[in-house]
Length: 165
Figure: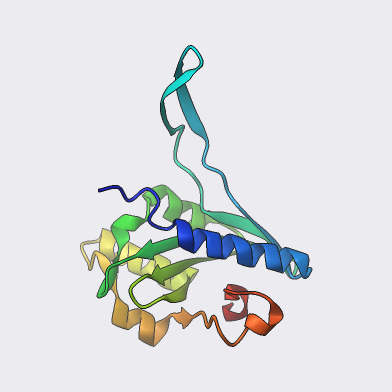
């Protein structure tokens, strides 16, 4: 089983929303490409792998502020495992001087939540010290910001996550 493209539909939704933000002059947010090393035998590609750790999924600017965020998707119905994050991603978000957050999408419920930097880093640090290795779904319902896909569609932005900041 491969998990490589698990979040592709979610990322396509974010990219479409980002295009709408740009078209409306609201924000300029782009997907960050992961650098790849390609191994060739003549003209044929025989292997490819990431050249090194990536930063985060998206970066840009909004209302004069720089933002970066990571987008994750899960089929888990009870929690979101921290193993979905790379330590380098968390540390990049920790060092970012602008606005940073994570968008977590629960595929089963078709719900997307925004988790702010402070909450994310606090829970990450707790799990690194032996605490819980996942964020319970109930925590998202009680403490994270649900991104409402219906209410803001009239602005032409299908996943208006910036309204949750």
